[in-house]
Image (cartoon, rainbow, N blue to C red):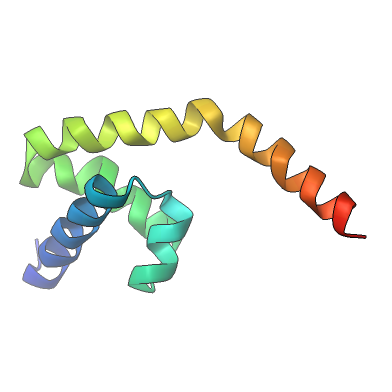
Amino acid sequence: MNKNIINRVLEETKYIIKTNSTVREIAKIFNVSKSTVHKDLHERLKDINYINYLEVDKILKYHTDIRHIRGGESTKRKYLSN
């Protein structure tokens, strides 16, 4: 794997553990696509650092579990602002 990719994966990992951010937020900050962030944190990280992978996986699963709530809040804000 390319050193630049490994460095990006490790930086994304540190960031998500520190801030508990979503994939979408990380993609904006690191200027890459959501697909890239997802692949970095789900596939590449497992090969680079398995212990961090387990921690990041918990965070991502939590975001998946609450996404229906966040979507509802977003829709509510959208219609209240009109």
